[in-house]
Image 1 (cartoon, rainbow, N blue to C red):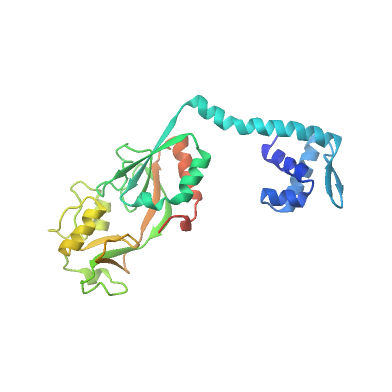
Image 2: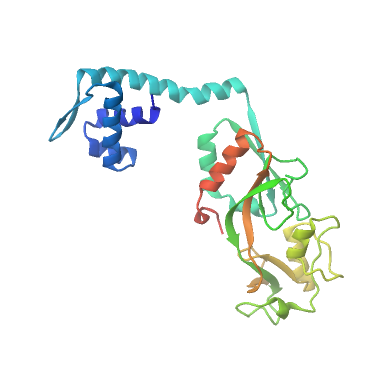
Length: 286
């Protein structure tokens, strides 16, 4: 017997009105009526007496109500009992630089509501590892940015983010509404450590030699602030006083993504991915 339909039946029985029950269940009235009719057909018994003012339980309906309430209460206890039997579970989430700040309250609240007994650990990596520890096996799932070498890794795009160039306020281009890549020729740029994913390094640096090697967002921003080095960053990146970001019009966006092993990573990873994917782009903080 479908537990979902039993929950529908219980709502109608308790509200004594199909319309009120539909409102309680956050659904339209016609599919609720069809579900109740289908349950009656399945059991071969009339469960409600229909009247102009609503519905009342028949003798058969009263028996089903008592059984359904007990069954649903038992079903609701199953997840907690299984989780308790399985013992404490831990999920390690990798984040890259500022990506943890983009998770927002919606992701945390929704995941916690579905997996209240899971201990979540957050592991932050520097700019040298765009997979945020996923490729090295340090984390189970990651919130990070593209582009990076994706072999063996699945990704779901959460929100595209425009890229800009970080400039000092006294830079000649700092007042422009946007720039193109050609406008940035001849500048000194930050570099990422040797061994960094080439796809990632090519996107976030110009490839020009001579700039300082940086590992963190703050090192990058301070290099711009103190030495006038140029650097790419997501538009909306928090900045210290004296800096601003000018969008680069001809540069493709960097996507904020949730990433996980193509092998699947287990039920907690799949649950985290489902929760993250269920949120709208607006749920991810800017």
